[in-house]
Amino acid sequence: MARSACYNLALNRVETLPSMNKPKPEKPAHIVLTSHPTRNGVQPLPIRWGATEPLERGPVIGTLGNSDHRNVIGTHSGSYALYRALAVASGSLQADHRADLSHTAPIVSIGPYPSWHDPAKIVSLDPFGAVVDSAYATLYEQGYDIRPTIAITKAQINLPELQEVVSSSRLVEDGTIVKAGGSLVVTKVAIDPVWYLPGIAQRLGIKEGRLRQTLFQQTGGMFPELVTRPDLHVFLPPIGGMTVYILGEPAAVADPARKLAVRVHDECNGSDVFGSDICTCRPYLVHGIEVCVQTAQQGGAGVIIYNRKEGRALGEVTKFLVYNARKRQAGGDRADAYFTRTECVAGVQDMRFQELMPDVLHWLGITRIDRFVSMSHLKSAAIAQAGIEIVEQVPIPADYIPADAQVEIAAKTAAGYYTESDIPDAEGLTRVSGRGLQEY
Ligand SMILES: [Zn+2]
Image 1 (cartoon, rainbow, N blue to C red):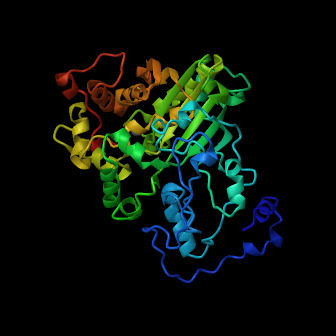
Image 2: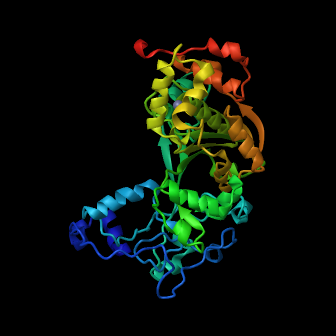
C-alpha cells in the first residue's frame, strides 16, 4: 500500500481506497528457506554494530517481503509476529504490506549519546530504532522495508493512589508535570528487543557459538539461521520488550547537572494491573512514580523502565503454580521457603538476566542515577557493572507493603535485597507466614 493511500486513510477518505477490500487469502506458495545465504549472490546490507552514523552502521531489516534484503535472524514485533502470521494466514492482512510511517516520527528526540557508539554498551536494542524513517530515507525510497523498533510518544496517566498523594500534599499540582486531578504528563517510549549476538554472548560470558546453538535448540529449532548463518549477527527475538516512562523534561534525563530518579520495574500483571496483594509490585511502581515526580518537580527528571519480564521472566503460568505450591506446602506459605518453591517448579529462582537491563539506561544517555527506587541488589549491581553511578538506593516505605506480601519482603531482604529495616535471620524467616488457600 502506498504511503499516500494510508495517510488518506487517516483522514477518513477511505471510500476511494480499493485496497480497503479485504484481501483474499493467498495460495500457499513454495517455501523459501532463509537458512542459507541468498542464491543469486546478492549480499544483504551489512550491520556494523557500534558504528557512529546510521548509514555506516546499516539498517536492521527483518522484512519477509524480500529475502535478499534480510540482514537479521527472525522478524519484527517480537511475539506479535505470530499474530501477524495468523492475520496473513486468515486473509485479513496482505503479506507484502509495508508500514506507512507518515507522521509516526518521535515526539521528542533522544540521543545520540556516546554510549550508542560502543558495541559493548548496548547489545539488546537498536539505538537507531526510533529514527529509521529519517536516517534510512534513501534506502526506504529504494524499496527497502525498514521498520522502527522504537516509538516515542506522549501521554497523560492517572493512578488512583497518586491522586491520594496529591490530595495529601506530598505532591503538588504544577499544571505541567502534575495536572489538575493528579494526572501526570509523560513521554513514553516502546522498545522492541534487537539482540547483537556477539555482544549478548560477551555480556553473559559465554561463546557466541554456544549462545546460538542453545537459542536454536531451546526454541524447538524455530530459527535455523542461528546455526547456519554465522554471517548474520543480529537476532530479533520473539519476546516482549519494554516501555520507558519519562516524567519531567526528557532533556534532563541525560543532563548530569540535574537530578535523576529511576525505577526499573519488571512486569507483574497480577499486582500492577489487578492489585493482587501477594506481592509489592504495584505499590513499588506507584512509589517509583511518586519519587520520579518529586525529582522532576525539583528540576530533574524521573524514568520508569517497564520490562515485559512477567514472574521474573518465568511467565505467569509458572508463577501461579508457585503460588499454589507455596500455600499448600507443609507449614503453609513461609518466607524461609519463598525462593525454594520457585526453584522447585522452574529449576531456577530468576531468569531476568539483569546483565542486559542497563542497555536502555545507556540508550537514554544516563551516566548517574541520584535516586534508584528499588530494593534489588541484582539490579543495582548490574547498573554499577555497566559503569553507571547510583548515588542513593530508595527502598519501599514499610506502610506501602500489602498484607500478604510480608513473605516476599522478608525472603528478599534476607537474600540480600536492599532495606533500611531489620533483616530477619533464618529462624525469623520461619515465623513470617502468608495467607492460606482456605483463607481467601
Ligand atoms: Zn508482583
